[in-house]
Amino acid sequence: MNDIIQTDMIVIGAGPVGLFAVFEAGLLNMSCHLIDNLDKVGGQCAELYPDKPIYDIPAVPHCTGQQLTDLLMQQIEPFNPTFHLNQQADAVERTNDGKWRLTTSIGTVLEAPAVVIAAGAGSFVPRRLPLPGAAEREDQSLHYAVRRMEDFRGKSILIAGGGDSALDWTLNLQPLAERVALVHRRDEFRAAPDSVAKMRELVAAGKMTLHIGQVTELQGTAPDLDGALIKSPDGETVVPCDTLLAFYGLKMELGPIADWGLNLEKNLIEVDTETFETNVDGIFAIGDIITYPGKLKLILSGFHEAALMCQKAFKYCYPDDKLVFRYTTSSTDLQKKLGVA
Image (tube, rainbow, N blue to C red; front, side):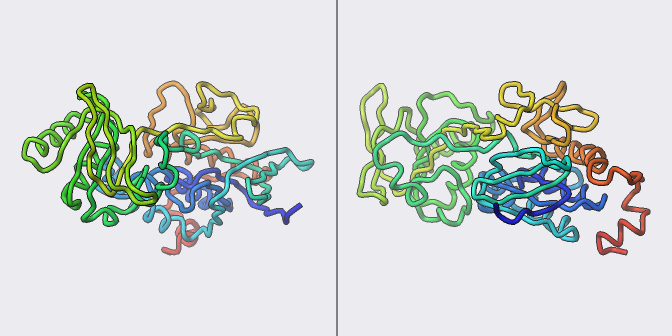
């Protein structure tokens, strides 16, 4: 067996809610190791929407997904969390001394009294284009996410989809690109009405084109792209493009967590809303992956859940210690931890 890493809390998921859990845990002297199947921290905010504005973080009128991630990383820096990226939480088992032993997909082994699942709604995987040549073009001329807007400057872009992601990136990339075209299977969209109206204004002004139909063929020699064949009720047409952004939505893969004996409802984990503990002692869950009456899938809700969760997790980590609630504004001890005393 690999060397076993000992810590107080194992956090599965390094998105905003998982990162804030590190902060709350750190205030209570709990050390954290985080596991994420992405190659960077930030979860969906950093992977899918790094440049997308967020307006509902308390006291932060405006920030992007990446900026929020950067601020959270700055906030938890005093607590020195350890990240295990590009790996998935695989198996978990109870040890003889009552801890949880977790093994990842690449063989990393960790032990802790508390495990926290903060994995969003699971591992998000884009719905890929089921066409010949798609796999060979992925991350070259075919993309399922926009990580850096600047990478698309001067490109001839075809965007496929009718939801918020497709419309948002149509509007955001149109000023940067040489040409932008949008294709959707019908002339009705699931995106915000304001976004749809702005897109139609660009079409009417001749600044982009809209095609009703489906992409049925990729043209050119992979990994390059010369154009896409679109089939519509009126026939077929070729849209010249060197870049295709496909936003057909995401499918959720809960992964091995589904086999951990947790109470699940439609692939969401049921929790006790006083402690955010699951039906398994010492395993907690917070964020979009959980369900309870009145649950709102908001980042700020996940922050609240992380704070309450840590109060109970502390009892597993330090069963003989009394938990004293303190405020960062008045506790010199907490201020020393944060390096601001």
